[in-house]
Figure 1 (cartoon, one colour):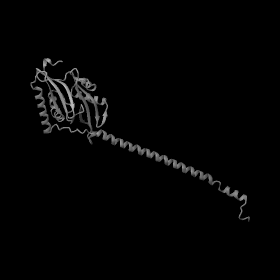
Figure 2 (cartoon, one colour):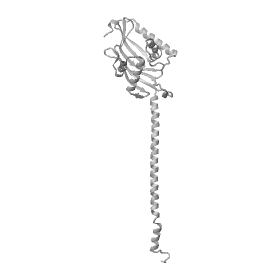
Figure 3 (cartoon, one colour):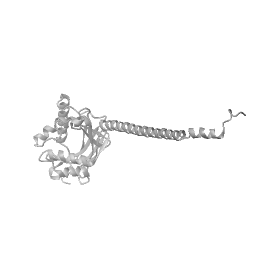
Figure 4 (cartoon, helix red, strand yellow):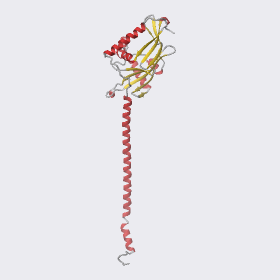
Length: 272
């Protein structure tokens, strides 16, 4: 082997010494690249998490809006000023009056039936006038509402008020139970209140009932009776003249219809 083709050991040591500083730089560059990749992964995770949160919140808001904006299938409040509503209410009022004042045998039981359309029309058209004649302010004046009979309950719907709901009508529905207690009292029990399909707390319902009772100058104890399911009226009866009283014996609520089982008794025998 010639001296030119085979480098001497001192020459190899010199080459190693020349390239020695490059290794730490390569290691440092690799560390920087790994650090940059970790930062990019963290940024990607944070952005993805934020995007998921935004999408979830938007989805929940859309879902919540659809829940509270849902309206019952029966919701179709009658127009109190429409000729059909007024005519239906007047016919219903005359029929009730005729049935109440009809001469009957003593202790004869009879049934008074009423439909959703009749009751809704009468509440919208005639009840405010009747209350004003009695000196009682109607707390729902100017607000449409509708009534439905279903599954043994009375459903009363009314739109929410406030500027926030002008874009879309949202309906509050109160579910009421009604029956005659064993001692002859009329029991009206609030079973629940919903905004669309969203249940509302009892405290919210009680506060609004108390405000409505105050505007109508009603006894505050009536609200407590409705909330607890105790007798709202001591007797479920109506005096039709100085000599006779119609007493409600039972209340039946079927789909689309409410029926009262009544008995007409002399005023002196009205007490049980």
